[in-house]
Length: 306
Image 1 (tube, rainbow, N blue to C red):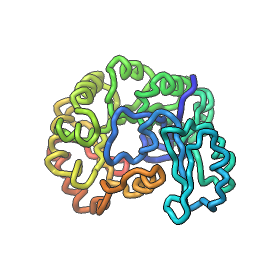
Image 2: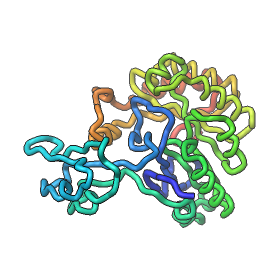
Image 3: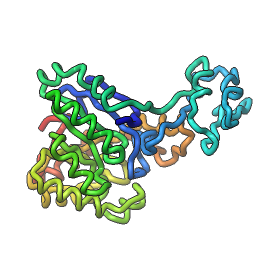
């Protein structure tokens, strides 16, 4: 089973308990305006241009058989990519002497990914850690994700997936026997706002969340804190009440805004206007939102511990 991944991160501490390795798959059904891994929205492998590494040698222009690249002296970026023509053949990447052109992922087999993840099996066992499949969203390349999970679980590794639950329940159900921890991202309680900022309503997500909670699975809910959008007391309170109704005393973690994602949008020639003037929440603002979760009877997870 082959699939497209963004990257594999070893020795992570942010995607479940203990020391872990996380594989980030390509493909997501949502298109969140604030996505921190925008290269993971498409399930195909795309091309990045890193202008700071470019020496303006134009080697890539002659290497592209589709004429998808053009150069403009004095422009920033110097190289423009016509993504309608680009077939990701890789000839420009091979021709570039400074790696200014690079792919945003790679295609690997489930066996190859599991081999990398299981290199640190002893660390997982000693720390209570394991492996996590994130993205993107593992529900998109679910057969590939399931193959990796089965291989790692058979070797004795704790397994987790991080998902937005925007997918068919019969797909989610396939993960139940091979996943020890489900990390679920809930973003907006309001249906209209959810559709506006992610491209989909939240009805299917809420239904799947109820089903998953009723299974008695180990479940961690995460809420990304996006200034002016999700990081509002009314939104946090509404999500908290929904979680409590499904799973009284459930664990919830607030993920503070990370401004570094804006750099990826520049690399992909995407608009960065959404991130204008956005900064991470201050300690007192986080404390206010944590207090709301606690007032609704939920267990607040801070830095991956209660």
